[in-house]
Image: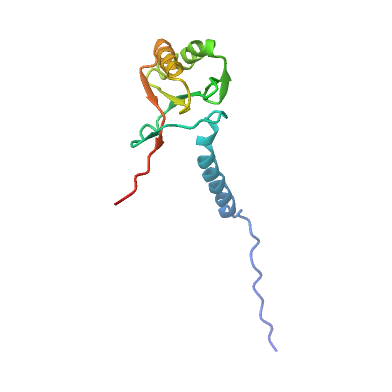
Length: 141
């Protein structure tokens, strides 16, 4: 009886990168979903309603005014008297010249406070200012 040589499989010398790529893509997706939530202050704000929504994907600086008068720039709580200085520091530089300043004021905030906030943003050098609103859902007939 003649014996045949059984072929032995070659040793695996390459690393399978498919699972690594899968994990990396999942992490990127999680980062993309959670990143917009990180730049908003922790103050509870009830935004007024509006029919349009613009400038969501642009680079911007968020100024939040709570119903109790507390202020935050992006995710940092600040005293009201330092708003101009903080905004001027954020808007300094050529790359930040056209940054959109988004004012997020609570529905129950006093109009005088909102107006002072808008004036402070303008005095700090903001060229573009927007007021954040909730999108109003209209019922179809």
